[in-house]
Length: 431
Image (cartoon, rainbow, N blue to C red; front, side, top):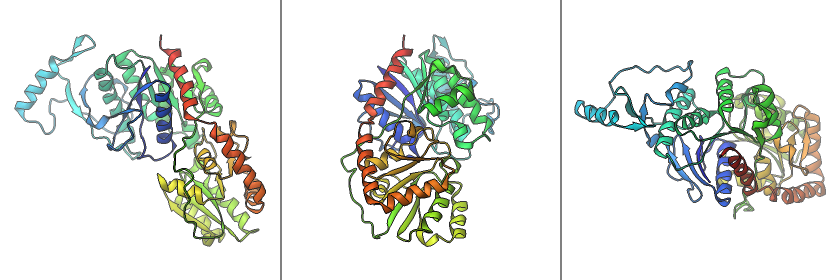
């Protein structure tokens, strides 16, 4: 089985759980005899390619004016001038380029003479021009699919950022499309959705032969909020990868108990509920420190709230952590809390559990569907959250039991098993 996969990020350069999931899944697929070509907007050259072939979309010279352009959203804020002018090319080079394009064969027919080659330098980030990059990525995806004609059996696109790319590749190749929904716009924004993003998500899932949801929670949203037929939506839960240095110890420097929040400091992740619970715990205990590791648009709000509650001397902000720093943070933690308002899955609790840390998670998370040895609370119930933190900190036997049983439980959640289920999805759409 050969897969052309479109993603937005890949370790070691990641902004969240999406890149981690892509890495774990591709490794698992390789062990299930699935060969993956992974296309991303901007590759740095240091990606682990032992299990996957990485294609840098910024290096691909795309043909402008062929499939992929009809996917551009109408509300994009950039304008393309229909002209024969191409930047940084001499008249002589232009004529040679034009002759090359005019004789190029695409799908059995000649490319029109007003088509030219263009290379896009993608940032691969999540900045203000994100929609523009998403649209241009679709153009490049069409070219990649054309160049790799006959070298893949199925297309796999991760999250809304790559859905147009997946559709473009499907239009060019005629191969079946599987889209992976890691987080919906309702998870990120509640009921105040970004209509442009919602439209892309709905278009991508409607065009797909199958939709993979990371939890039953997400599957229900896909069916109810986007109108996707239930027989085309399959749940495949995420997993966690184990490495040789997972149990490495870090220098704590303090004797106090450490309670950690690690994730984007944004509405979806519920950082403000973590702060409120911390304040309640600190009214009862003085040997606890709270750590918020991450960055996001709610950072200033959270800092002001910590100051107003008078707990700044027991509350620490690390900023965004990645790589070994994440593992060090887990190894220093006595309790990990994920108070997400809406979490499609949530890989971080699994990473904490494999580090032998007891975890508290919100009932509004997909990972709650598969964990028995995690304390589960409603994200809004800060009293219950505070009580759970207090119990795990104050009663060592309880914390040890949850840590030991949690490690046993998470050890069985392997990417190889998740990949086997994804392979079954591929086989169901390949004739």
